[in-house]
Image (cartoon, rainbow, N blue to C red; front, side):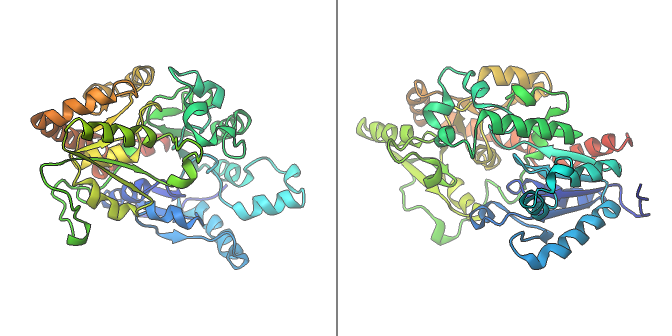
Length: 403
């Protein structure tokens, strides 16, 4: 349908939409390998910008003056890229303004869903997608069955907000996503509903970081130094969008802040020299200055896996604690056994976290060794230079070029 233009690139990939900073660092490293790799930021939520580290193009959907540039960029995509890599639940889309416009005037009933993406596929473009949330293609009902607690009902503020998360919404997206994507990235083993599909792969390399930006030897500016004595064990905890994700009635959230605050107070009363360093809604580029000063990083105790906070902690060489769901690890082991077997994150639950923290507090050499293993692990599985080499092969395989 469209002829490929002659070019000097090994391959051409467009990251349409941000996934934290992952696509940015991956694209920069792919460029070093001879790829055309560009990142588009179309997110208009200013709060989300604190998680992004760069972009090549930015679109604003609310401005009518941007309609023509959007159409032109879409047309250019047919000639300029071989792969379009999307991220996030609901995120496989290109001409977002037209979705709303066509729906308003009921034109959408004459077109297939995500018609713009289907046109790209007809033109031979490969669609890649990165999963980045628990509601991505998995219903509340299925997720709640993992146990031992009902994580959705007992910990998540979005449980009774169907506009954000519901069986109907999550499954409808999963169906659409699986129809469109040729290859899907995930990490964590949550293989229920539409995640239980051969096109969904455990791909830790996509969720990558720059090894120098998150370095254990990071130079900390004076104004970011914590006013806490060196002999005090600093336990770091953070929550993005804290207020919107925390219940006003009981202060519960999926990150388990409501567990950590009283737990640290208990440890203090028992004579342990510890301090909770708690941050929320701090721009990601600055947050690392606080993270690197921590002795231990603590995260979710009921969800079953970890996200960016723990990956950053491991890259900084800090021991990290969160709940690792055994069923998910078993699922992951089928595809990435070495990742699971070498994973240095310490698993804990609300019932065991007290003993886990006491053990780490009492054993500085253990903390040091786990920190060393964590940095080594992150370099192997989450460093952007390694990720680029992995994704070069993934993308070439999709294009039928198995070099």
